[in-house]
Length: 257
Image (tube, rainbow, N blue to C red):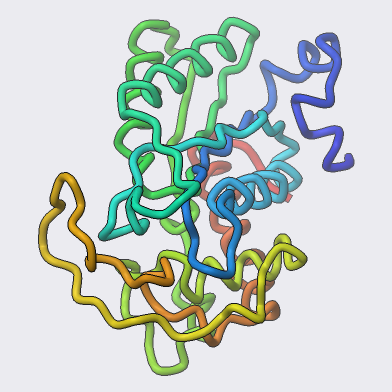
């Protein structure tokens, strides 16, 4: 089955009706958020959609149109809203959107629903939206998962990117990992000539509102993206998709190819 045939937006209502009750239905949840000088504003959405397409191929699933706006970008994890283009949803708005999507999918027969996150700040709000929908629907046959792709990345996938040892996820916004993923998933939109070092900044152990200047490197990346390669990104995509598909299949009691 082609990628196009797995996209819900490309199906007729009859085709969707035939598959809804048996298929795993994935909702990519991204953001419109600055990603340094070299990556596009929709990086989180692009990664979530690219991975969702590949997971759906392994699970014979369906992919919903993505939610392309995310919860508030924070300086300590996403650079914050001080960069032009970053467009934040209030948490309550995202909760309501997720609740409505789950409720509507269930109304049309979907019983296996996965919210695949590409933006870390979305996590608690998506969980809350899914929880409210599932509680309201009250169908014991409805099963839903919320999972960020980074939750299943194995250590061996990071080794080629960090021969000196992986320092942790805290500074990996618009840095090596996301850059490598974009080189694998949508290389034409990576401005490789703008990949370079970033100014060192020590993030404080708090979130200040409003955000004071100087908390984020002026380039927007929280760590240098140098060292990212397409080959490392392709390996990372393969292992991450395998981990996502295996996790979802195990939870829903289905097989993955």
